[in-house]
Image 1: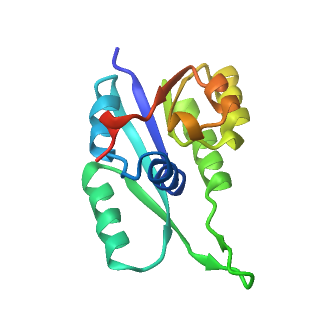
Image 2 (image 1 turned 135 degrees about the vertical axis):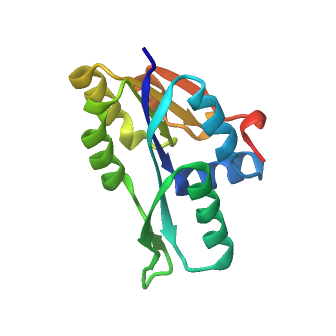
Length: 158
């Protein structure tokens, strides 16, 4: 029986971690090909921040062309100059709503806040929880909570 897979991409996290570690961009098409070799991707969502610039719009269109549903949040600039654009709760809700319908959840993020989520879906739904993240910038707790951890290296970069 073919595995049913749900893919969740924390776009901001992956953008900043691949840029910081490698000064390169992540290859979403390569990720899609690797994951689809393990089964059917029945759901794929990319979570991004909407800044309304052309480069980002092109990137979002490319993600849709690959097969992702793109969810956007407005970019919020705080009065102190910092920015807010966090999808953690949205990703968590979507994973919880989807995990019981699939055999495997693939999370593209290095954010340690997701460790409890992965533990919960593994114990409650018996799913395989795989994580893709930049080795030097992925929380150890997230790596430990994953069924399988895939380090993002040169072969997953553009």
